[in-house]
Image: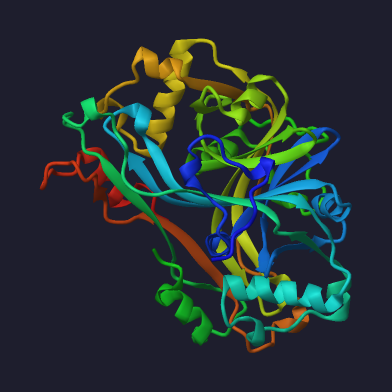
Length: 221
Length: 221
């Protein structure tokens, strides 16, 4: 079992039993999350923006227009924080106080850089699309040289990182167990609804196998 | 139609048609999101943490243990950023380049403060539980004085704020419309799965009406 090394900044002091540094646990959360929230500082003000992202090995990849401020800050090597969160359930306790949420989240702290290699940039874009819809990359037109030129890809190494996870039932006070209230967990599920074809698509065009596979449950549960 | 005033920090420069300052739009996103990502600075490092939250009027409320660092920073009036994001769909284009995501997000920039009034603190906790499961507050044990003492509630005014929204089909290049690839949107749906009763609950205890109402579709779609 490979694990990351906790640092003072990734050491969880409260409810430390919820922390994990296990690589596989961390990777699985990052790979399931569609969006991460990226924190950066500009003029002493923190900003938090949602971003689609991909992971390759021990690095996160973000992309956007070459004029995006957030990518500027990341590429400049300024301190950033990336958090990806999955909400798994509402935890309903007998007391208001012990209500909670089951979740899995990963926080990566560090500094990023520009991806200079066009090969790595292309691999990052491919990893992102394959993460969203496995099998899609080979079905669509690949980026042109001009599109790659208009796209900035940045990389943040996964090095200083911690996962936090809450699972299981509500933890009520002993004295509250006799209360009449229902208690338990309401699992939160994500699934895909009926695909909406683009307006210009020829009527009756069948869904490709990579989409039907996704609908058949890859992301349910 | 009430709207917030854009500021230099909440003015969206790229794809500005996605920005909204409409109060109702902003409130509806904040009220649907279970979790917000809160960004704050500690020792020149930004941190981003997921937090359950409630909204009352033009203020956001967060709570936790009195020893939580993030609440400390908010209560100290330091600059913070709160972003709540809803992912609505995967946007599959004919080209890799034009893949996207449909989403709604709200970013609140500002400074917070401690909630001194126990009445307001209680109202905030109540708003949170009623947001998660409407009708639940009156079914559970209310916080004791001791629990309130152990709970810090902080408030961030909603004042400098912007929503960003992407809706609709993929926007492919004209030249790509003839490509054979399927294109369209895969809607992302959230729903609740089968409730898991707490282990100490008497077997066969019926689900309360406020839970069955939630399961019957309040959060679907």
